[in-house]
Length: 170
Image (cartoon, rainbow, N blue to C red; front, side, top):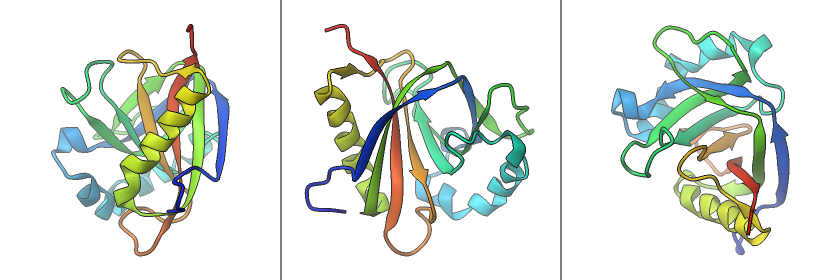
């Protein structure tokens, strides 16, 4: 990861209502890296639904949320894709519906999977320094976006971080 650990690109995106569909490591009781190693067991089914994958963020992602509750009571970690709202959920898959909202989007190059929390913190800190707020606990989520390779593959990653946010009332 670059020395200053800052994103190479950062912007705010306006998301329409979306549905994230994937498999949840919390439900399956798997470690995140184990889940990535078996991605070919479940991602192809989702990728066959390519007409409904959202063009806003068409990449393989890990979507994290806490069921609108306190962190560490429930830690959802879904590997999958963002889809158009209302997309049918295949049997055995999990989903989370998102309302229209603003999302911060940071892009990092040359990262490792172990840098997950460094990227998370850099994105969160940029949002807060811009005077934006982060909804918590209701509406809180963030996602890792993998452009080419995923964490189970060799080498450094070019990836992004998405974060729910809103204009701060402060």
